[in-house]
Image (cartoon, rainbow, N blue to C red; front, side):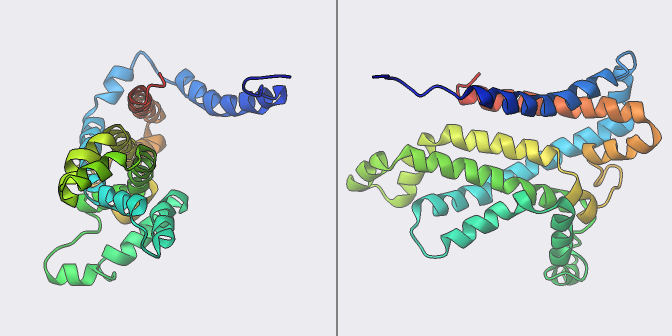
Length: 261
Protein backbone atom coordinates (compact mmCIF):
# COMPACT_ATOMS: atom_id res chain seq x y z
CA UNK A 1 0.00 0.00 0.00
CA UNK A 2 1.49 3.35 -1.05
CA UNK A 3 1.81 6.13 1.53
CA UNK A 4 2.74 9.82 1.45
CA UNK A 5 1.62 12.66 -0.80
CA UNK A 6 0.33 11.82 -4.31
CA UNK A 7 2.91 12.46 -7.03
CA UNK A 8 2.49 15.20 -9.61
CA UNK A 9 1.27 14.02 -13.05
CA UNK A 10 4.19 14.18 -15.48
CA UNK A 11 2.10 15.85 -18.18
CA UNK A 12 1.63 18.88 -15.90
CA UNK A 13 5.27 19.89 -16.49
CA UNK A 14 4.58 20.60 -20.19
CA UNK A 15 1.90 23.32 -19.79
CA UNK A 16 3.72 24.61 -16.72
CA UNK A 17 6.89 25.09 -18.78
CA UNK A 18 4.90 26.70 -21.60
CA UNK A 19 3.32 29.12 -19.15
CA UNK A 20 6.70 29.98 -17.69
CA UNK A 21 8.11 30.68 -21.16
CA UNK A 22 5.09 32.82 -22.01
CA UNK A 23 5.95 35.07 -19.06
CA UNK A 24 9.74 35.00 -19.25
CA UNK A 25 10.34 35.28 -23.00
CA UNK A 26 8.82 38.78 -23.44
CA UNK A 27 10.76 40.00 -20.42
CA UNK A 28 13.98 38.52 -21.80
CA UNK A 29 13.24 40.04 -25.22
CA UNK A 30 12.78 43.43 -23.54
CA UNK A 31 16.19 43.14 -21.92
CA UNK A 32 17.79 42.47 -25.33
CA UNK A 33 16.44 45.83 -26.60
CA UNK A 34 17.93 47.90 -23.80
CA UNK A 35 20.63 50.36 -24.98
CA UNK A 36 22.82 49.51 -22.02
CA UNK A 37 25.45 52.12 -22.91
CA UNK A 38 22.91 54.95 -22.68
CA UNK A 39 20.58 53.56 -20.05
CA UNK A 40 21.98 55.77 -17.28
CA UNK A 41 21.24 58.97 -19.17
CA UNK A 42 17.85 57.79 -20.38
CA UNK A 43 16.47 56.88 -16.96
CA UNK A 44 17.83 60.06 -15.34
CA UNK A 45 16.49 62.55 -17.90
CA UNK A 46 14.41 65.37 -16.44
CA UNK A 47 11.11 64.03 -17.77
CA UNK A 48 11.89 60.54 -16.44
CA UNK A 49 12.87 61.86 -13.00
CA UNK A 50 9.73 64.01 -12.78
CA UNK A 51 7.51 61.09 -13.84
CA UNK A 52 9.20 58.66 -11.42
CA UNK A 53 8.93 61.11 -8.52
CA UNK A 54 5.25 61.71 -9.27
CA UNK A 55 4.63 57.96 -9.51
CA UNK A 56 6.29 57.31 -6.15
CA UNK A 57 4.36 60.14 -4.44
CA UNK A 58 0.96 59.17 -5.84
CA UNK A 59 1.54 55.44 -5.28
CA UNK A 60 2.46 56.13 -1.64
CA UNK A 61 -0.64 58.30 -1.19
CA UNK A 62 -2.91 55.70 -2.79
CA UNK A 63 -1.37 52.95 -0.64
CA UNK A 64 -2.16 55.01 2.46
CA UNK A 65 -5.75 55.42 1.22
CA UNK A 66 -5.94 51.67 0.59
CA UNK A 67 -4.82 51.03 4.19
CA UNK A 68 -7.35 53.48 5.63
CA UNK A 69 -10.25 52.17 3.56
CA UNK A 70 -9.24 48.59 2.86
CA UNK A 71 -8.40 47.49 6.41
CA UNK A 72 -11.94 48.11 7.73
CA UNK A 73 -13.39 46.53 4.57
CA UNK A 74 -11.31 43.37 5.09
CA UNK A 75 -12.33 43.25 8.75
CA UNK A 76 -16.01 43.47 7.83
CA UNK A 77 -15.67 40.80 5.14
CA UNK A 78 -13.75 38.41 7.38
CA UNK A 79 -15.42 38.96 10.74
CA UNK A 80 -18.99 40.11 10.10
CA UNK A 81 -21.95 37.83 9.37
CA UNK A 82 -24.18 40.59 8.04
CA UNK A 83 -26.25 40.00 4.94
CA UNK A 84 -25.04 41.34 1.61
CA UNK A 85 -21.35 40.64 2.20
CA UNK A 86 -21.23 38.62 -1.00
CA UNK A 87 -22.27 41.70 -2.94
CA UNK A 88 -19.66 43.81 -1.12
CA UNK A 89 -16.94 41.23 -1.85
CA UNK A 90 -17.90 41.14 -5.53
CA UNK A 91 -17.82 44.94 -5.66
CA UNK A 92 -14.35 44.99 -4.10
CA UNK A 93 -13.05 42.52 -6.68
CA UNK A 94 -14.68 44.28 -9.64
CA UNK A 95 -11.72 46.62 -10.40
CA UNK A 96 -9.57 43.51 -10.91
CA UNK A 97 -11.62 42.41 -13.93
CA UNK A 98 -12.79 45.73 -15.35
CA UNK A 99 -10.93 47.00 -18.43
CA UNK A 100 -8.75 49.93 -17.25
CA UNK A 101 -10.43 52.38 -19.62
CA UNK A 102 -13.82 51.43 -18.16
CA UNK A 103 -12.47 52.14 -14.68
CA UNK A 104 -11.33 55.56 -15.88
CA UNK A 105 -14.71 56.34 -17.45
CA UNK A 106 -16.47 55.22 -14.25
CA UNK A 107 -14.29 57.57 -12.22
CA UNK A 108 -15.03 60.39 -14.67
CA UNK A 109 -18.74 59.69 -14.33
CA UNK A 110 -18.34 60.08 -10.56
CA UNK A 111 -15.76 62.85 -10.11
CA UNK A 112 -15.78 64.56 -13.53
CA UNK A 113 -17.11 68.09 -14.00
CA UNK A 114 -20.58 66.75 -14.81
CA UNK A 115 -20.22 63.62 -12.71
CA UNK A 116 -22.30 62.30 -9.86
CA UNK A 117 -20.16 64.05 -7.23
CA UNK A 118 -18.00 66.19 -9.49
CA UNK A 119 -20.60 68.92 -9.95
CA UNK A 120 -21.05 69.31 -6.20
CA UNK A 121 -17.29 69.36 -5.67
CA UNK A 122 -16.84 71.96 -8.42
CA UNK A 123 -19.44 74.23 -6.80
CA UNK A 124 -17.33 73.94 -3.64
CA UNK A 125 -14.27 74.97 -5.65
CA UNK A 126 -12.73 71.49 -5.83
CA UNK A 127 -11.78 70.03 -9.21
CA UNK A 128 -10.72 66.40 -9.07
CA UNK A 129 -10.54 65.20 -12.67
CA UNK A 130 -7.30 65.84 -14.57
CA UNK A 131 -5.37 66.64 -11.40
CA UNK A 132 -2.84 64.83 -9.22
CA UNK A 133 -5.73 63.90 -6.92
CA UNK A 134 -7.30 62.10 -9.88
CA UNK A 135 -4.13 60.03 -10.27
CA UNK A 136 -4.31 59.03 -6.61
CA UNK A 137 -8.00 58.10 -6.91
CA UNK A 138 -7.41 56.04 -10.05
CA UNK A 139 -4.51 54.20 -8.43
CA UNK A 140 -6.52 53.59 -5.26
CA UNK A 141 -9.47 52.28 -7.28
CA UNK A 142 -7.40 49.59 -8.98
CA UNK A 143 -5.08 48.79 -6.03
CA UNK A 144 -7.68 48.49 -3.25
CA UNK A 145 -8.69 44.87 -4.08
CA UNK A 146 -5.09 43.68 -3.61
CA UNK A 147 -4.98 44.92 -0.03
CA UNK A 148 -8.50 43.78 0.87
CA UNK A 149 -8.13 40.23 -0.48
CA UNK A 150 -4.68 39.77 1.05
CA UNK A 151 -5.76 41.00 4.48
CA UNK A 152 -9.08 39.12 4.43
CA UNK A 153 -7.21 35.88 3.74
CA UNK A 154 -4.82 36.60 6.62
CA UNK A 155 -7.73 37.33 8.97
CA UNK A 156 -9.50 34.08 8.07
CA UNK A 157 -6.40 31.92 8.59
CA UNK A 158 -5.38 33.65 11.84
CA UNK A 159 -8.41 32.29 13.73
CA UNK A 160 -10.19 34.00 16.59
CA UNK A 161 -8.93 32.15 19.68
CA UNK A 162 -6.74 34.97 21.01
CA UNK A 163 -9.45 37.55 20.28
CA UNK A 164 -11.95 35.48 22.25
CA UNK A 165 -9.54 35.24 25.19
CA UNK A 166 -8.95 39.01 25.16
CA UNK A 167 -12.70 39.70 24.96
CA UNK A 168 -13.39 37.28 27.83
CA UNK A 169 -10.88 39.24 29.94
CA UNK A 170 -12.90 42.42 29.40
CA UNK A 171 -11.05 44.09 26.50
CA UNK A 172 -13.25 46.32 24.35
CA UNK A 173 -13.57 45.58 20.58
CA UNK A 174 -11.27 48.44 19.55
CA UNK A 175 -8.61 47.34 22.05
CA UNK A 176 -8.88 43.74 20.81
CA UNK A 177 -8.49 44.96 17.25
CA UNK A 178 -5.43 47.13 17.95
CA UNK A 179 -3.65 44.93 20.50
CA UNK A 180 -4.51 41.44 19.24
CA UNK A 181 -6.00 41.22 15.75
CA UNK A 182 -3.79 43.61 13.78
CA UNK A 183 -0.49 42.34 15.28
CA UNK A 184 -1.54 38.77 14.39
CA UNK A 185 -2.17 39.65 10.73
CA UNK A 186 0.60 42.22 10.36
CA UNK A 187 2.55 40.17 7.73
CA UNK A 188 -0.61 39.86 5.61
CA UNK A 189 -1.34 43.57 6.05
CA UNK A 190 2.19 44.53 4.97
CA UNK A 191 2.09 42.15 1.99
CA UNK A 192 -1.23 43.63 0.89
CA UNK A 193 0.14 47.15 1.24
CA UNK A 194 3.22 46.33 -0.82
CA UNK A 195 1.12 44.69 -3.54
CA UNK A 196 -1.23 47.70 -3.58
CA UNK A 197 1.80 50.01 -3.93
CA UNK A 198 3.13 47.93 -6.83
CA UNK A 199 -0.24 47.95 -8.60
CA UNK A 200 -0.58 51.69 -8.09
CA UNK A 201 2.92 52.28 -9.43
CA UNK A 202 2.10 50.45 -12.66
CA UNK A 203 -1.38 51.88 -13.19
CA UNK A 204 -1.93 53.29 -16.71
CA UNK A 205 -5.37 52.91 -18.32
CA UNK A 206 -7.62 54.43 -15.66
CA UNK A 207 -5.07 57.16 -15.00
CA UNK A 208 -4.79 58.41 -18.59
CA UNK A 209 -8.59 58.29 -18.97
CA UNK A 210 -9.43 60.02 -15.71
CA UNK A 211 -6.37 62.22 -15.10
CA UNK A 212 -4.87 62.83 -18.53
CA UNK A 213 -1.15 63.28 -19.17
CA UNK A 214 0.33 66.58 -17.95
CA UNK A 215 4.01 66.61 -17.05
CA UNK A 216 4.60 67.12 -13.36
CA UNK A 217 0.87 66.92 -12.60
CA UNK A 218 -0.58 63.64 -13.88
CA UNK A 219 2.08 62.06 -16.11
CA UNK A 220 3.29 59.10 -14.09
CA UNK A 221 6.07 56.76 -15.20
CA UNK A 222 3.81 54.36 -17.17
CA UNK A 223 2.36 57.35 -19.07
CA UNK A 224 5.87 58.68 -19.70
CA UNK A 225 6.83 55.28 -21.13
CA UNK A 226 3.79 55.36 -23.42
CA UNK A 227 4.71 58.88 -24.61
CA UNK A 228 8.38 58.06 -25.14
CA UNK A 229 7.41 54.99 -27.18
CA UNK A 230 6.28 57.36 -29.93
CA UNK A 231 9.29 59.73 -29.92
CA UNK A 232 12.22 57.83 -28.37
CA UNK A 233 11.84 54.02 -28.33
CA UNK A 234 15.20 53.54 -26.57
CA UNK A 235 14.06 55.74 -23.68
CA UNK A 236 10.76 53.83 -23.50
CA UNK A 237 12.64 50.51 -23.25
CA UNK A 238 15.02 51.83 -20.60
CA UNK A 239 12.17 53.22 -18.49
CA UNK A 240 10.24 49.96 -18.90
CA UNK A 241 13.20 48.05 -17.51
CA UNK A 242 13.39 50.51 -14.62
CA UNK A 243 9.72 49.95 -13.80
CA UNK A 244 10.18 46.20 -14.17
CA UNK A 245 13.15 46.26 -11.79
CA UNK A 246 11.06 48.09 -9.18
CA UNK A 247 8.25 45.53 -9.60
CA UNK A 248 10.65 42.59 -9.26
CA UNK A 249 12.12 44.14 -6.11
CA UNK A 250 8.64 44.50 -4.62
CA UNK A 251 7.75 40.89 -5.44
CA UNK A 252 10.98 39.66 -3.84
CA UNK A 253 10.21 41.63 -0.68
CA UNK A 254 6.67 40.23 -0.50
CA UNK A 255 7.72 36.62 -1.09
CA UNK A 256 10.55 36.90 1.44
CA UNK A 257 8.10 38.23 4.04
CA UNK A 258 5.99 35.14 3.41
CA UNK A 259 9.01 32.89 3.83
CA UNK A 260 8.95 31.58 0.25
CA UNK A 261 12.31 32.92 -0.90
